[in-house]
Image 1 (cartoon, one colour):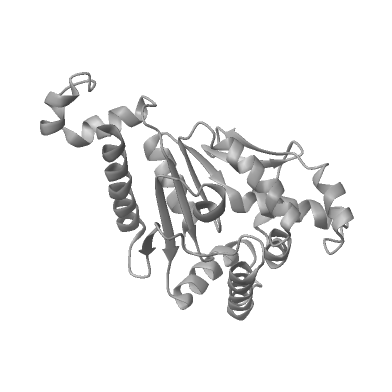
Image 2 (image 1 turned 120 degrees about the vertical axis):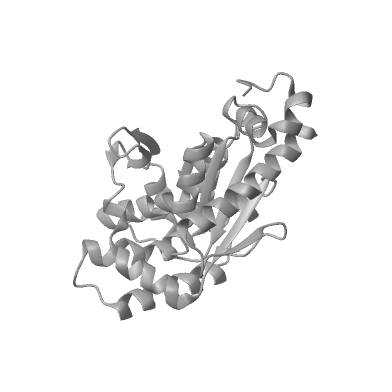
Length: 257
């Protein structure tokens, strides 16, 4: 079995997938993968899996908006007042720092690891309101584009394929039946807070979906060239295999061109 694809024309016939992945791992022909979609569709799970498989950087855009929301709440920022928002944003520094214990990048807010703090339902209830603010989105989008300057990233969110990286090589739009999404989110939150109810989760999810898809600044919508991934009846492995197949096709096309 070849150790590299130097003789690509020879090996591509016998070992096409090996050549594609080797090019990928060597940093050649890097692409940007965007994953948008509704709440609790498993966007982050898929994005992390792809990033790990392809040796790419995973950027959780939702964690950025959650961290900003956390800062606003902690510092009593009235986000209905533009001046307070602008002043607050000047004091926010967001970074993704690799944690060797969890083996993944985690969000830091002003040098504090807030990866788990921001998953609270209190943050979930406010994040859509904060993320709808034009100044907040401009602040986050600028940083996200900087992170993707050299490609080789997987980023998930609501407007990644439409606004942040409209020229991304692969755009995936994830969806699933609402009842299934509510159940998934409930199980996730129940582990942290046994007092949470299914009705609370359903109301929160519906509210977030409505706000995200109706906001003036960068509303949630499917990019015209995005591939729909409905995982209502797919296992985690099945959706990963399907998405990886799409990635390999895009890489192969890029290598050949």
